Image 1 (cartoon, one colour):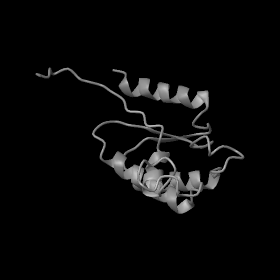
Image 2 (tube, rainbow, N blue to C red; image 1 turned 120 degrees about the vertical axis):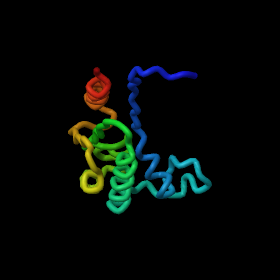
Image 3 (tube, rainbow, N blue to C red; image 1 turned 135 degrees about the vertical axis):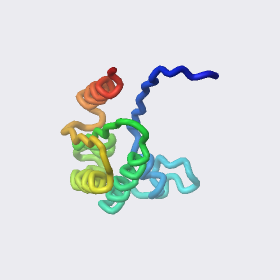
Image 4 (cartoon, rainbow, N blue to C red; image 1 turned 90 degrees about the horizontal axis):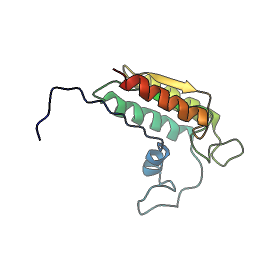
Length: 132
């Protein structure tokens, strides 16, 4: 295949970051041998690790990117009254993310990951990043 000199634009949207945590901390959604053994809890230490890990992944990005963080909750379990409801953990995540990331655009939004407004914000940011 021969590539032309035209610019190719694409976007990657990952809405399952809890699976990274599950992989490293034996969570319910890790497909490994220990799947299902972890209790439904996400400590501040785990959230700090996840923020730092995501920052390291983004630091290797070859192009422009944005991270949209839904401060109203990261999953259905992280809803008010849910077993993983942890507003402080989300703040710890953002603190470690922003301390370890370079040249990023991290946007915190007051929405839950499952809110239609969060989906709309994702679409708007994709349009902005791929316009041109």
